[in-house]
Image (cartoon, rainbow, N blue to C red; front, top):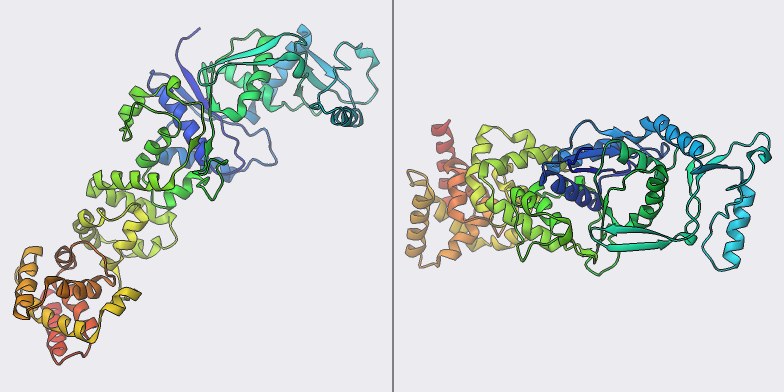
Length: 494
């Protein structure tokens, strides 16, 4: 028997890859990768009516975007039904399973009796030791596990510790339905055993399932994998995580502009800790992650903390890497087509020049794209409400005069434009801010932006003077001079 660590991520393809599933996948991936083991991917698609190809694609896409690879081809549980039935036939032959012919009406009567007596509904075992010759004609039976009636079923859980269930409270669960299809409980055990899974790491909503599955392992004489049941993620208020808290699909976090490495780092710290360390490289996660450091209390999702962490990763990213991340994001956001259509090499160079200033102010890629809009916006530039209010008649007059001063600047750099604007402000006895703010409004359409001289340098002389002319309007006769200067620059630079 191989001693290789084997974990698995086994989602049901009935919806998107939600944030809790992504964390489970990450924990399995880290545990395997840190021990030179394998992580397998199994699609638990036995619920054929609810399983969709779109959900399967979303799982593959979400894991790939997060950087979580798996070993071998994905396993589809539905393709293994023959193997599941084969195992049950062996259990029937060994006497650890039996055919049950209880009718739906009889099962309903059991449920009603349990309800009246204030106890959990349980199958009463009426076909457990009955002679199969008493079977009613024409009735397809279900196959049930002959579970132990006394004693206890115990799991030594790597996170929860020792967990015990009294066997008298667990009934004979169904292994095969009357149509011959396997139940989830059986399929999971057979699939995990057949591929040699050594560690089952999953949410603690599966803890009761663990008791059932251990009984199946014991009936088959198979070794039970190590179990680690992780507390679920709760919202900031301590209630179960819902969409209002952030229980969204991984694809939604991508569309909101989060970097995969930031989301990975955030997820690893949801329930697991390594001293006081908050920022982890992938290599550090792989080398330090272990199951005993997972807490038993539910982790709380904090959206603001995720944004701050993402901002850290954006500031630390190389500008070309960040530009590549922006380009990869464009197909996934509503207004990405506008930028994608304009993204030629010239605009890429402008973005690269602007990114050092832009990424200091943004916490997500979508924020960064929005703040960079001034780089590719059409003239005349649309102003937001604050920028429009700032451009008073006096401010537009300043734009005219500052534009004339700037028209003389050569070469056009952040330093030379700053010198020209400072000299102009001094001659007019104005504070630098009284000139810089109208410039910012006219050049970016906003009252906040990266440093205004960096903005001038990135936009270039022709575009900068043109935008100033657009907003200066007819405030003074000087606007005509400014427009002519911008036109002359257009001719000379083309």
